[in-house]
Image (cartoon, rainbow, N blue to C red; front, side, top):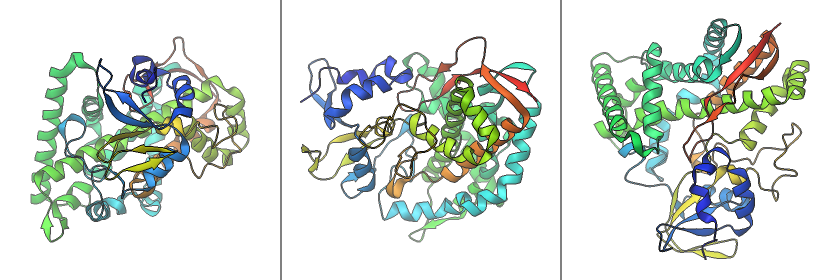
Length: 388
């Protein structure tokens, strides 16, 4: 049965303030939603932590395989099931291991400090000045593409995840430009291979065959978008929390060891990715409800991470939680490949900010949230930083 207010999950209000809607609907999980004005059933929503956690870990029933993804691109890994998923994942895993991230750490720290050196005195728009350029330049370095083109790369990422119907023409042009660019970069790497991810992709073989042009393009699109969007939103969410919670800022000042639990609690309470998608390969019972085979399913990460059955006072920010089961980066075989890199960028950022500034406060106008129903972060975030 479709709950009366289930469609609120897909309203404009849900993009900027989803948590009251989650709290109202979570006890009804799982439930189908209506896909048209006549009330026909559409996709199934999973909002309870147990429901989401179970679905993410059971790829034999909850399949990720899909022919098309955002912008019409098919994205490897996140739209693949085993065994192909594991073979493809091995192609890029080495770039995101804790060891590789540790090797990158001095360069990330240098880049972070260079961006902070350029911040204006007083108020700054932190998304444009820091939370976009840092992760885009980091993933550009790994891909082997020019970091100074980060504004173009970010524009392409925005087009990929945009759900706004009034800019379809411009979005199409951006996506075509992105496809052409990565096609040219792949051709260049075939002539002049290097130590970057694009070179690894054009040289790779899966089941004895080279990746197709479409697969290489999908990989590049996935790595560029996932490599910057999640981290940009994590950084913005963390800084917004600190700007409104000077007590937390003082705690991080007093004890830098609290930075890592602060990052994990930020991931839980304001998950950068709010939901993703699965398809059921067989009938499955979830919380006493049978979801039929062939159903479209939406696990809501943001709702699961605030489930009172999983955490005490889930809407309160606390640094003393056991957070090993939060699902901000997914769970199971599709656990986010780039999570060590995102955590490293967040830790570097907070460490450098605490060292440089004695206070962080909201700017002269409120921040504006992204309008996407899938991601949760800031389009703009004015902040006032007081140097030491």
